[in-house]
Length: 113
Image 1 (cartoon, rainbow, N blue to C red):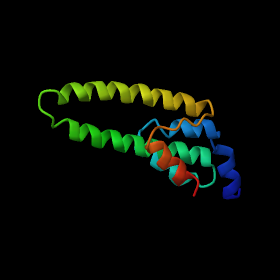
Image 2 (cartoon, rainbow, N blue to C red):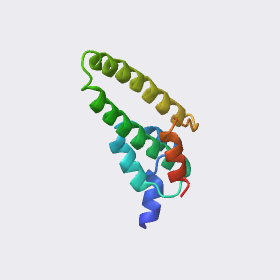
Image 3 (cartoon, rainbow, N blue to C red):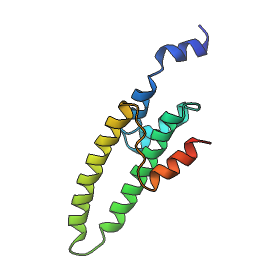
């Protein structure tokens, strides 16, 4: 059986693939970005997942060093990140492109290349 035929038989639908890009944060985004070369919708969500997760980890790493209120900011930010993350999975599964500020612009620009 040719490799192209085998790939098509096991290939996920674009909305499922886009939603999966968010599940393991930037790791699943990287894996899906590597496997998907043509679908701009899937590439956009994979890139947004990578950028959003990376931004969050850097932000938490920096804010953690703020005396007294750093812990509270981290707790609030983690809750906000989780809710946004769930919303992004939901919208990707429903074939919508919700563009986050800054990281969404970067993802859209890179996905269009």
